[in-house]
Length: 453
Ligand SMILES: *Cc1c(COP(=O)(O)O)cnc(C)c1O
Image (cartoon, rainbow, N blue to C red; front, side, top):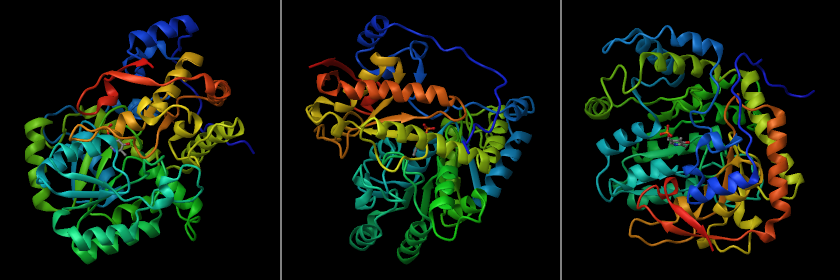
């Protein structure tokens, strides 16, 4: 049977059609960086799944319940209870989004020269570690670095490499992180077995384990459907076990919080939490709102309940795989198997004639926009190729991510996207590379400008 959208649509927003000539003009004006386009000039926006989801009628209803008291708001306690029930952590600290949780955590615990291992650091996570002059180290399993290789848990941590790091340089490692699902590595899941292995190493070396939990529910669904002995458990039960293996987490509620803004930092350590709250008050707000409105806390609380519902997760993961299957059928190389929140086109494999330092990912992203007004994002040499000493080298992969906003697009939108990608794929030999004409020093992919080579 067809797996259908497990909702009906109560409110709609028109999208704008443009001509190819209009898109050529807009893209040139944007310095050939789709981040600098106006969103209304985009037809199908797959730039990110972050904060772009559709809230449910229950969430919109909850907004009206928001208690906007500065301190001790009822909405905070509702939010805290939902997060504490899910994660089991003692200290729940709301933040305006995930990177604020990262900044507060890393600024309060890192000293220069520290090392933070992860399966793969997300860009903001890496940047927030490097700004403290610490090293963000990626230790994903070797299979996770081969785009075309099919493996059920390509987000797993290389336990041998982690053991080696903790043995050799453990004194410089204040905590271990695992990102679920592994966004930078293709939205790939981490198995419970692997998380248990990381936990055992953390116990052996007395290190706290933190999850970058942005897509914990999607990860739980992959565990349920792919890991032996897990199929009878509910996604929520599995998610709870994932969190129980950790000592804390950073979270962007813009992903599996099903909210448009928000995040949190959660942990068990009293001293770390006190330092985090002190910095929170300085830069985000009082600990019962953390830079959010009371109504945001309500929306997140409700979203965290909806995101672990089985019909939602089944539809979510299936609709992503559906796009992946269509691209494969069109002969477009993608990271296999499809991840939870996005399809990643392997732009380096698709455009072998464009050298990595001429940004094949940017070439692909720009072609998709020109072809059909579809906006994706480069995850490659522009995002990760610049080192803090100023050198530029090719990133491990040059990918184009097509992220699927939650509950926003229907199957025919996705069919259209597949047609656009297939059309670009059929003309791949005609695409050329780009050179960077404006190169910011940090998180340069957001504001860099380019011109065709
Ligand atoms: C989005 C994301 C973040 C940062 O969260 P923001 O809410 O965008 O600040 C951190 N880690 C991962 C894995 C993410 O996907």
